[in-house]
Image 1 (spheres, rainbow, N blue to C red):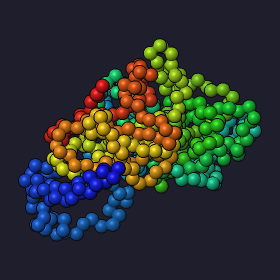
Image 2 (image 1 turned 90 degrees about the vertical axis):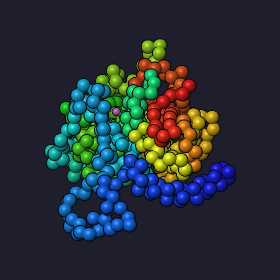
Image 3 (image 1 turned 45 degrees about the vertical axis):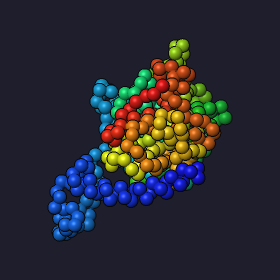
Image 4 (image 1 turned 90 degrees about the horizontal axis):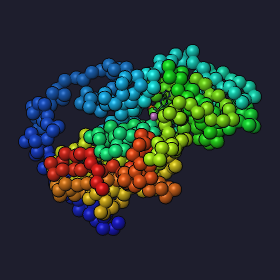
Length: 424
Ligand code: MTE
Ligand code: CO
């Protein structure tokens, strides 16, 4: 470690000189971020310094700068037959820190976005309870509430990569994940209000969308850390994320996080719903299926450099950045390799470190301009080590769609372009 620290110090000096070289390159027009109008570039006085800008409240609800219009959700049109039962992906290659801005959280809908009037919305609790209940949104806001940051990952994240490297960009290969701060009521308070009968073991949360999406949730998990959430990152849930109410099931696959939550039935057996039998089960090589694979295993990905975020500065000081997460709690550490797994170095986790939330990691080094095979490997607090894709295939085969948490490899070429590859 001492050696690594020393190397970072040396690199930092290199960074200052290469930053100066970088602006020279910009002036020479070799940078992809080349200014549209050289007249605006220092030492000239730019246009935006000569005139008054727009006044306050010009945009009653602010939007990102127009120069950031590439930071958007994207979908893969050939993946699904319609956009109503489909997925869009978070632009994780453009983001930093651990919080996903509300406007770019990936979406997964089975029947499109339900537009729900909160005044008409109710949460029903029925089944094995002493008192069946019907809560308005106002009622729910009178329970004690909590604020918690959690990642949500769709079990199908990286699902296209089971048989080999497919899609060129971590937005598409790992972008079915987001991480926001939820404000909501612990589900256990609501269940206590209704009085769960002693033979109750399972819950069936159900959505108000046209899919009426439902899943079976063990009562134990519901009483442990599940929330009924109405806010994300301080404001109301977005319609795409289940406005006005969604279930939060920390660390477990996204499919259980029922959006537009309208009903919770309490029972003594699982319901064997479509989403836990024909879907969200994992087909093994011997023809059997794993089911109720709820927990999201530890996973990580380098978000930059990556195919949509190539290296543009030539050799010199380079920042590697990425995300790691585990449905079992905290990430203990992340290692990264530049040479396809021959040598591993410890990455630096920076910022908030919270259980079942994204963790942000960095690794700074001096790139000599030669090709790299970049990988990251996460280890969580239970000691679980993120497997290679081949290790995963040895156990699971290649017929699965869900729960692919294998190590991602990026091939960085000498020109800075990056490709999704696999190495054996
Ligand atoms: N809830 C309802 N009512 N309808 C849905 O289609 N999709 C599920 C889950 N909850 C879904 C739902 C799936 S598969 C996932 S991965 C998450 O919502 C996606 O949440 P997001 O759209 O906020 O990213
Ligand atoms: Co999903």
